[in-house]
Each structure stands twice: as structure tokens, then as C-alpha cells.
Amino acid sequence: MGIAVTIEHLNKSFSKTAAPAVNDVSFSVNAGELFGIVGADGAGKSTLLRMLTTLILPDSGKARVFGFDVLNDYRDIRKQAGYMPGRFSLYQDLTVEENLHFFATLFGTSLEANYHLIADIYKQIAPYKDRRAGRLSGGMKQKLALCCALIHHPEIMFLDEPTTGVDPVSRKEFWMILTRLKSLGITVIVSTPYMDEAGLCDRIALMDKGTILAIDSPANLVKRFPYDLYEVKASNRLTLLKILRSHQRVLSAYAFGEFAHAVFTDGTDLSEVNVYLSAAGQSGIIIRPVAPTIEDYFVYLLQP
Amino acid sequence: MNIQNYSPAPLAIVAEQLSKRYGDFVATDAISFDVREGEIFGFLGANGAGKTTAMKMLCGLLKPTSGKASVAGFDVHSQVQELKRNIGYMGQKFSLYDDLSIEENIRYYAGIYGLGRKEIRLKSLDLIETLGLEQERAKLVGSLPVGWKQKVAFSVALLHKPKVLFLDEPTGGVDPLTRRQFWEMIYEAAGQGTTIFITTHYMDEAEYCDRISIMVDGRIEALGPPAELKERFGAASVNEVFYQLARTANRTE
Image (cartoon, rainbow over all chains, first blue to last red; front, side, top):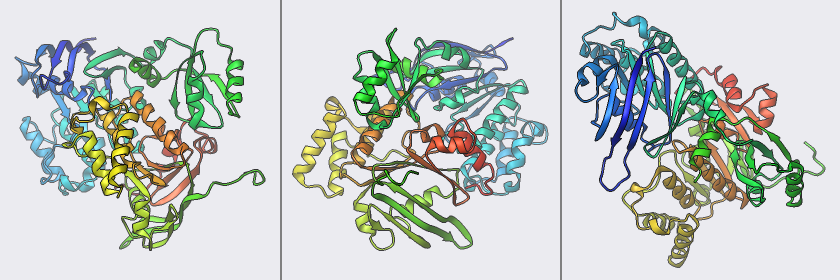
């Protein structure tokens, strides 16, 4: 398997006073991989993607896309890369079809030549092909943006938070499209703030404050969670976390959907914890082991 | 439900056959539900399902075409001003002024909500201390990390002690640790009796709510505690429940 992207000690700051946006980042992405960069707003995901797509220059460090250097060979990278920015950036006053023709022409190709690549997605927006892009719904805009980014048949796609603000049904459709691109041999690098999407990637990088905290497959990442994890439920969820944290053997406790997730020191007698919770006024107590998720591991890494 | 030892909390939101039409288009189609005081209620739906329209009616920003609703005891038709004074709102987009400091933002909003001079001073001190932002009080809000901004915005929305707090996708884009701190703030507020009405696209978020409703094409198609809905639909997550319901939707935005 070839290497699609290599990054070595990449740095980028936007001001001398603020913390760097990307701080000594190194990793590589295999050709044909569906690779996720997961992190909150401000983690540095967009800055990283914009350096890889040659839109901004790194302060230091090296990055290569299919062997091409982001500084010296930016023209070669731009021919091979498709980029879907986080903010909708097509021409609002051109129609759907005009936008597509425009981007095809820019790359010296035509809508017809690579139609097979976008056919599945384009079919869904084709009924609106004469509508101006600015008047499309959010989901439609996103599909058009993806078509425009694909029209020159890139070897690698960079997508910056393509599903932010999109409802679950459209999100699921979108991820099916990404999986299909992968099956066509296109390398896909996608950023997202959402943990549930992370599980759909071959490998993910967890990113926070400009640095990569961990990189691995979703299955391996959860194996790195170093404790036995328990889910706890009781009658008063509003006070449960505080009571749990007041117990001496609780290492950490945090909200997780309808449950609290908790880690205890080795050898903790759970029936004793149960009694403790009852004494504090809780009823209907459930304490049982649960498999950690990527989100649990991320929380673990972020805890001070 | 066991009626005998069930003592219901008073209702904070009541909607009966609430509808909004735009010509032939029924944005919100006769929805009925109620929310108890201190409850955390998740209001879910696909893009274009009618969530925003419904929420605007409940906030007194949009007149219903038909149906009834009251929020914090005030009628959405006839008591809009009183209603607005008794609710808080925190939007999807960050709702503080980037070029004011944390303290200035707090004082500004407190003033808008009609708090007195002395109260404003005490409240802003109190809030800054609770959030642990003593060092940052004079910093411009624009320079803060997203997570902090959201915590400040949440606290500001509670300044005037609203009976009902509307949260429109409040935790988008924050890291998982900050998100949990944010949920604890929500629990805290609910524990003190504030009713929380929250819209979100993110179904894992829905699992934190006491009850949720799922809107499809303007109507509420499911309503209940997350655990109960999962059982009813034979689904492992609220996401699956949502997907089963929403893929039948005919309309998009």
C-alpha cells in the first residue's frame, strides 16, 4: 500500500501571542484510506487541512501529498486533490449546473468526462440544476459542493466538517458517499467534531489545541482505555455525579447519555458503592461494566 | 404510569394542536405535548421538520396560525411580553458580543433583562466566580476558546432566572470534556427548577434528556423517555429510532 500523505513536525501560528493553531504535528495517511481528524472547534483541524491543500503555508515542518511537497509542488497537489471547505464557497449566483461546469472547466475537464464519479450524488440535486446555488437548502448545497470538488477526479479528497449542522439522515447518506469514494480508490481525509462518525473511518486522529493526542483505528483506540469502565444509573441523575465523585474510590465520573460513566480504583466493592448511593438518597441503582467508546477515550485524554 | 404515587410537577410548557401555516405549507402541524417544570426536554427533527418554527412560536417570536400554547404560564397569543421576560434563550450561533469583555457582556445582558444596578454588579461577580473566570473577566469574548464562550453564554441566558430556558443546538463543535461540563451546568439548572427545552441534530445528545420528541414533516411522531423509545422501536440508540422515523420524511428544508 502506498502512502498518500506524510506530515513531519508541521507548525502553524496565526499570532505571536496566541497558542499555535497546529503544533508539531506528524503522521501519515495510506493511499486508499478513509482517515478522520476528530476534534472540537479550534483544535486545528481546518488549519491542518488548509496546509495540506496548499492554501496556507506552514511556518515550519514538512508535508507531502503523493510525494509532492506542499511548498514547492503545490501545482501538482492541486491537480490531484479535491477540497470541500467547511464554509460553503461556491458561487451563490450561479446555478447548480453552472457551478459544476465552471469547476470542470477550471480543471480542464468536462462534466460529461467524469459524470460517473458524481452520478449518484448529482441525481439527487439534478431536479434543481437550474436553481441558483445560493437558494439551495443546506443539504443540497453540501451535495453540490461535493460534486464540484470531485469533478476533476481527484486522487485524494479533503473534506472539512462536511456534516456539521446536517441532520442524521443526511449525515448517514453523506458517509455512505464517502465510503463509496473510498471503494473507488480515492483517499479520503475528513474532519469532524462528532465522535459517532469517527467509528466509520479506517483510522482517526484525535486532535486538541493544535496537537494530535492519538492516532489509530477506532477498534484499537478503545482498547487503549486503561481502566475498567462502568455505567451507573440511578433515580436522580442531577445529583448522581456529585455523589459518585464524593466516593473515595471513584477516580472519575462523567455524564454519558442516560448513564454516568465511572472508573473505580482497583478492587472496589461495587455493592458497597451501591449502598453508598442508596444512603445518599438514590434508588433504582444500576452499576454494570460497559465497553469504552472512542468518546470515553477522548475524555480520558483531555482530563487534566 | 402508576397514578397513585405519581405527583406530577406543574407544567412549564403546554402545546395543544399548535400549528403554523404559510399558505398551503404546514410548517408545524397540530403538535401537542407538555413539559414539566425542571424537566430536560429534547426537541428533535430533521432539517425542515418544523422544529425552528415550533420553537419560535413557543418563544413568542412567531404567531401560531391555530392551536394553543403556554410557556411558563403565559399564553403565546395574548401574553407575549410576559412570556419573553420569563424565558431564556441560547442560540446555535454564539450569542455574545465578541468585542466586549466577559464582564461587559454580562452587564449588558443583565441590563437588557431589566436587572437593577446593584443586582447587576453582584450577579456579574457571582457568575465570574462560579465559572472560575476571575483572571479572564476583562478579556474580550472573541479571544476565548469555544467551550468557555458557550459556558458564559449559558450562564448569561440564566441571569434573569427564567422559568424556561431554550437551548438551540448548544454543544455543537465543543470537545467531549467541555461538553460534559456543559451538561452538568444543564443538570444544575434543571435541578434548581429551570425547565430546559433543547433542540439538537445530534442524537447522542438526546440521550441526556429526560424525554424527547421527534418531529417528522411538521408532526410529532414519537415522544417519551429515550430508554422507552429505544425499547419501543427495538433500537440500540436514539439515533436508530430517529433514522427509522425520519427516513420516511417527504420534505427537506
